[in-house]
Structures are given as C-alpha cells and as structure tokens.
Image (cartoon, rainbow, N blue to C red; front, side):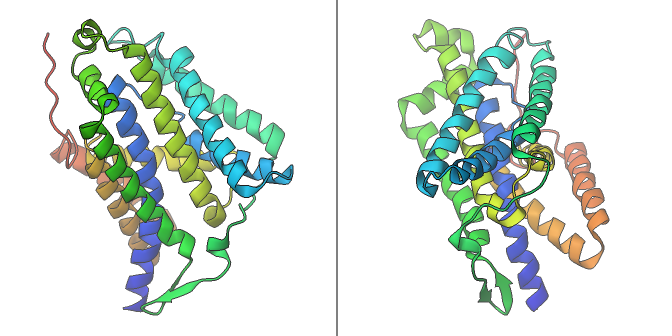
Length: 291
C-alpha cells in the first residue's frame, strides 16, 4: 500500500509538469491553430535564467519574475518571426521546422552560457520530505499538480468570462470574421504564444528544484507534454490536465513494477493506442473545417 501511495504522489508531481506543458500547447492551438515545438525549452529557459540571476545576487522572487518575463518575451518573438510568416497558408509546415530549429539553437546557446551540467534550483520546498500514508514526498512535488489545476481553472475562467478570452475563441473559430469584427488577430496570436511561454517558464521553475536544470531538460518534457496534449485532446484545457496527471501516474507504476525503459515504451504506446481509438483525443472535440 505504501508503494502505491508513493507511485501516485510521484506520478502526480511529474504528471503536473506534463499537464502544464500540454496546457501551453492547448493555449497556442486554441487561438492560432499552430504550436511552438520548442515549447519544452521555455521550461528550460525559466529554470536556467532563474539560477543565473541568483548567481548574480538577484533575490529569488525577482529572479523568478524576470525569468518568467523573458520566457514570455521569447514566446512572443518566436510567434512573430518563426510562426506567423509560415502560418498564413493552412498547408504550410514551415512553422513546425522553424520552431524546432530555434529550440535546437536555444539549447546550444544555453549550453555555451550555462554549461552542459545540471544544477538544482534552491527551494524551501525540497529541504525536508513529509510523510503521507507512509510515503515520503517533498512539498514542492505537491505544489506542481495543484498549480497545474489552478492554471487550468484560471485559463477556463479567462476564456469564458473575459473579453480577451472570448476574442481568442473568435479568432480560433474564424480568424477572418474575427478580423472584420475589429479583433486584432496578430495580437491575439502573440498573446497566446506569450501566455503559453510564461506558463512554461513557471513550470520549469517549479520542477527545477526536483529534477535539476540543464540545457536539455526541456526536450523530453516538451515531447511528452505534446503527447499528453494529443491524448487529452488539444482543444480541451481540462482534458489535457487530466491526461497529464494520469500519464505521470501510469509512468511511475510502469517504472516501479517493470522498468524505466518500459516506461517510455508503455507511455508512447498508449499515445498511439488512444489516437487509433480517439483521433481527436479523449476529451477533445472533433473540429469541422469548411472548404
């Protein structure tokens, strides 16, 4: 029983990270029908920039705010110069290739400045483990899934109750009609990518005290976050969060009862199986395009 509780708690922690990444993909797709395949690197950017700022004597709260702001700016600039020029045509895949290329270049740049080693971000949440049902867990690990759920609830509220959220829905439904109604479509695209990148930066800061920060930390997290977004249904915010938490729990049970290598086989095998049965994801809505 104790081991089961341990796997569930650990799974919720890593699943919360996947959920936050997937939520970023949901935000971008909901507005622009395009995503940033370097989105995983926004986690790395938030974590690494926070550590570099602390090394220069900047207090932790200011370092966190600055790192999130830079992550947000990165998302806005990437949308403007790597996505928008190629997303005008529905058949173009240029934005996929450019965002992947920028992610690789960003990792190389960070390796040059930060080094190729891993470093933990100091946090009071990992100083002492607490016991829940006999299982040991750091408070930091419990914060991650809670933050993911709160972020999803906040996003849902924004999309339903605010003008900017409704504008995002309008642009997603028909960008040309939204433009005719006075909505600045390009601004909405930039906002969605910036918001997703800021959320990614915050996620990186939360996970860095547990997994440690490195230039390559975002690669696997980004890939699994995208898989989770597909499983849950990229059009559904609650769906991707539920899928992320579930994906993390499944990984920990496979890792504990079979092996670490089998974790990747089962995880991505599950992704393929879900796509075969539910092409739009478990909670996604089937999108209809008029031609």
